[in-house]
Length: 249
Length: 249
DNA sequence: GCATTTAATATTGTATACATGAATAGCCTA
DNA sequence: TAGGCTATTCATGTATACAATATTAAATGC
Image (tube, rainbow over all chains, first blue to last red; front, side, top):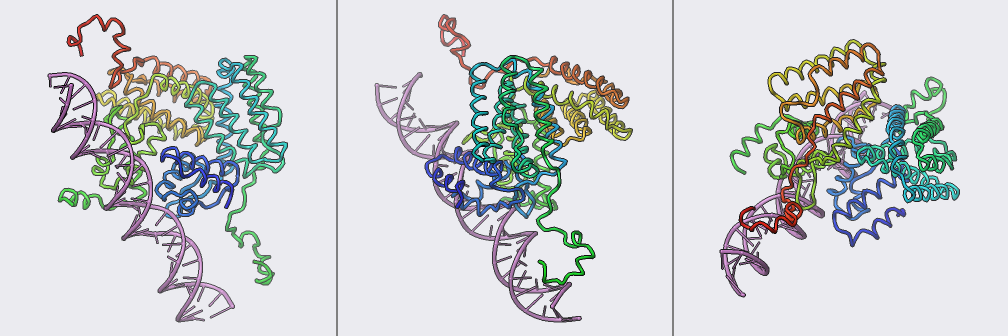
């Protein structure tokens, strides 16, 4: 049993229904964002229900929420699986982040205070630490958290929620298209950004954020991964016929 | 089972589950957007289940989706009701529209063709017609449809979806804070906008959209409606003590 | 031996029954 | 008669049973 499952089970008994569902939602969401559940992975209702000790009813509710956030894909009569973002979706997501996150920087610069800046620095520190200790998945999530917190500081809850969704999906995109060893966010980018914001320089922060996001996007290798069930005919073509069947499988 | 229910069941025939749910979702969503279901209205699961001849299970699924889109508010153990947007939410929504819709105009101007322009003009025409014939609720929805279609033309599905949600919520905001007789969108604004877009003048379209949205927002009367259970202490304060109890209620 | 059809199995879709908690009405008391 | 308490009613939360469909395995024909 994985750590997620164990943790969830330990937490399971003493919680009220409402909070319980939220906990499970976070557990699944985190597992996806941190790539412990990889794109394409099937999420069977029974299995999840067993793991979290609730009935399928509750699981379905959570899966639907995740589906609306586009972290999982719900195929009728086929069930749920972790979304595998396409290259086009990846482009859309990063374009959206350019528009929204950059657009928010002036507002953030206007509203940020010493307390908020300190909080952000602490988040950036944790992120660096995770990177140093090789916990790349954790680092990805912390990075997303940083961007979300930033958006929240703009004071616009609606746009902050959009950014939250975009960051979740970005984590998924990084998980699929990112190079191992080269995490999206450069180590000190976030600290630099905080500096500009704290100095009240919204425009500087805006252009920095733009470059920051462009850098992340540029670091991706946008090759669509093979299907789970690859079209062998397509892969081997005629040459495949030259090989005896059982030498490969 | 009563005869009425039997008859209704016979009537409800040929749709597949998937499509059926989508139909019901649209029915409820439209009713909310068109103000046939007013903010604050309770949406009892049994009642909806009866109306649409499905079990509460399906209704709950739909209510949850609407809740995630913030068209309905789900209060634990109290059920669902049509969301009553606060003034702050209204501001957030219109700020978000400023950022996103205006930001999309250059893209739209680049991608729009004769066919798309014609389609938009037809939508604008229908909207004017609805206005002329006094169908204000319909006009509000058509206006939202116009803005959504526009966003879709940008080619960014993610941002288009955001705009869709913002427009739905805007309809709710208009329903609550809008003056009767003064619909948000001026009659010919949309036609003018199409002109700029078709001319490929993205920057002009952008600034026009900005003014257009500002005009809508400015037309609202942002007075929060009284609560269902007003805080009398807060309202009357000390002066309330000077009045004999039974002269007011 | 391979392909195609058919049976078995597994998984999701839907409805319903029961449990839990909230709102309400009636009752009792002061 | 007003205030508070209790019992009833009503609505939602949750689990489970059953139905429908997809997947897998087996069997049969070519």
